[in-house]
Length: 472
Image (cartoon, rainbow, N blue to C red; front, side, top):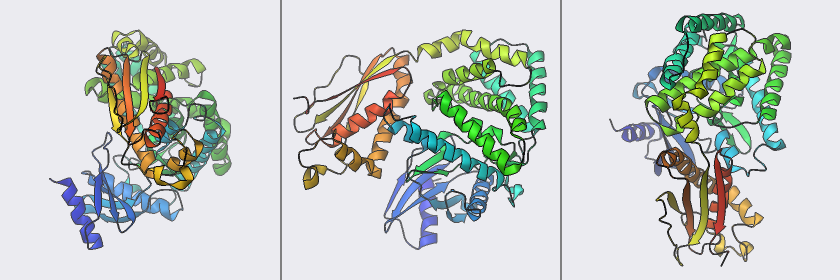
């Protein structure tokens, strides 16, 4: 089946004309396929998903949340039989890329903390207001985070992570701990909307404000799970002070909104953080260790570290000794040590250059990329930028307000980031990344500086940025 043609056909049915441009967006781990359609100045997202149940849930939830004035995308029209829907375009910047785009000094400053507190406040509204009047028949595959859902996540962790990483454990004692944890989690109740995948990649940032997507797996559940999904996101490396402040703010506001004592809410926080990390590690194991996808493999080490830190903190208020011992044994296993070694320090040398004057290519180890920035807007012809370079704050502001430039830098960063596990596996310890434009002083300089700053926030890398033309 030609998915592109299917989406375009439904667009024509809706609008009576073809879009002017139709660009397929990068696909994530799901089967959903997205296109950005531009027509007469309007930007619209066209989505195709082979799962009718997921589509019904997402569209139904979105319409309900919009009626509650919650910040989710508007659904313009839905063709259920064709499994296609069109929705509001929230841009390309999610919370993960928003953090990566910030400089190392600004990544987790007071502005970032304020944004996380806003997100925690929004989450309380989604959990408490979103559940009111919600059509629970839309929930797929389960109406609540019930015993079966919990057991699925536990077995996902056991079979797709512990067994694949070859961590030792006693089957009977582990199952006993699973039952203890399940009973404890169910005691928290299931009275609120559970987003289920409330992570940095599913929070879009538009005009400085957060918007929320990918809640088609939502169901009834407890409030502690979603906030743990956010602040214990193994890919985002959120520092402890923001993690604790965000969780505290969420618990306080949720208690004030519902009247549930804060102490009772806090009693279950550690256990829900634990089951969320188990679910995440199951996914990382399946996608990374089984399917050998490097972007998932690289999340295993930080997720294991977060789980062991959680056990050491005493936040898990029940005794699950075999589960704790199995987690502690993971870092001792050969496969885990290999993953840790694959995160050994790598140097990334980033440079800008001029296409007019050429570039000298480094052939030392065959690792690297050259990106052409000439498609971005050129400030050289604008009088207000005369005499400036890509390092000047005026140019940084100019490109910082340009969605195409921000998206380009984010895409380049993702390409580089996704290649690092592959390079490390080959024994490469330094890669060379270059950005070129006509003169080598505006677009390429800004891109090199911006992407260099984004990469510097990653663990186990050092970044060195040079500007060929500015250094002449």
